[in-house]
Length: 369
Image (cartoon, rainbow, N blue to C red):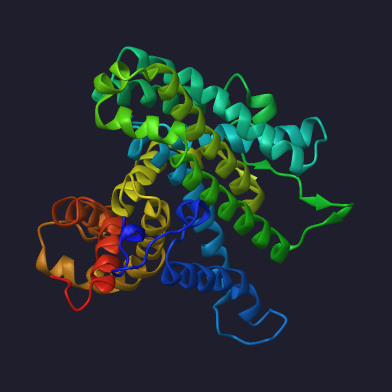
């Protein structure tokens, strides 16, 4: 949106200029600086090659998890934000990708480089199966159909597939090797971040293709899209496949990052959290995954833990009729829920929409009104 706003007299003269993602100098410089900062972060910790303590060591793990969850939320964005279909089973699809990747490495001796894409493709096929109801139902009913995946898949992992998945117990994931050498934590960080960047670029370009434009037309008016000759059901299935494929990719990376996996990491609450990340980030915007995941992770790992001690002391005095233990246990979900409510009321289009408006106002200065 903001990329199309240019100063008077500035316009494209070649097709290559029109096709580039970051079309303005400001966007190009900002993207380059951000990429440089992310890749340089591990080198600026006390264990980095420079031996400085500019970046906290714990922030590296947070950045890795943000990258993984960004992939999952971006897949959800392709389905929900661009195609207008709802899904409450993203965490279950991540479980498919995580366990498939781990099983291929453990049972068949595949390398991570083969197991990860195969696990993502298998997860996409599973997503196709659960996307079949989209032919007949939509809205609330489609949400219930995808919710079935959130209950069926974990049950399968805990019971019939227990010999492969270790049931409810943790399943150890083999180490990632390259040329016979085991990758250390620094190499794993760069692996995850590189895959995250590639996945984000791929999603951004998918939206610019014929398929992406068909997604948007189905979201806006599926009846009009069908009258224009778009095979609505086929494109809905493609959206479900891409959504699940991204979830499987994120699940495989999460398994490698954590070293072990259990079904409790892929419950319904996680699926709802991913959907909340998308809403906060701004469904239907390319930057939704970055803003949504970044905001929620900072909220959960920095803001809420920072204010929790004060609230534990203040709320029992302000609300003496409620048990102090109950207040302490409910602080995190309550604060997260209140944040989501405030976003739905005051910023329903998400942070990405506000970011676009700010960029447009900057480009139109001093006539930003």
